[in-house]
Amino acid sequence: EIRGGNWYAVGGRSFLAELFRDAGADYFLKDDPRSGGVTLDFETVYSMAADADYWRIVNSYPDDFSYGALKSLDPRYADFKAFKEKQVVYCNMRQKPFYESMPMEPEVVLADLIHAFHPSLLPDYQPVYYARLTE
Image: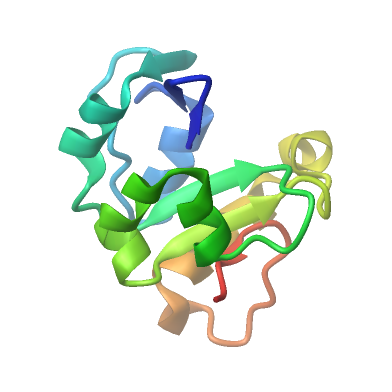
């Protein structure tokens, strides 16, 4: 998600990239050698991730976040495959203590991602942090 004209992500050697691998997914920067933050412009992200099956978003949206709210932030977001196919995996930090609690329970975050990417593997699982974004 763009903030101030830049897209912020983490490199391919980050904790998040490792969680994606463990959950059976490819992170769009999986080949990036950095473990920390990466600043990218929209065009770079679009060229690398427009056809990604899933899009993970963590933010502090003041209301219920939706596809309409996401599109209102930047209409170009609607061009992403994950947006079109309703495959956005979302965590609202106003509603969930993601950064405060997640480091102490990575197995829960991993289960959330497995459930989002491969729901048939954990059919009765109730996500704690991440869930598929609803309309």
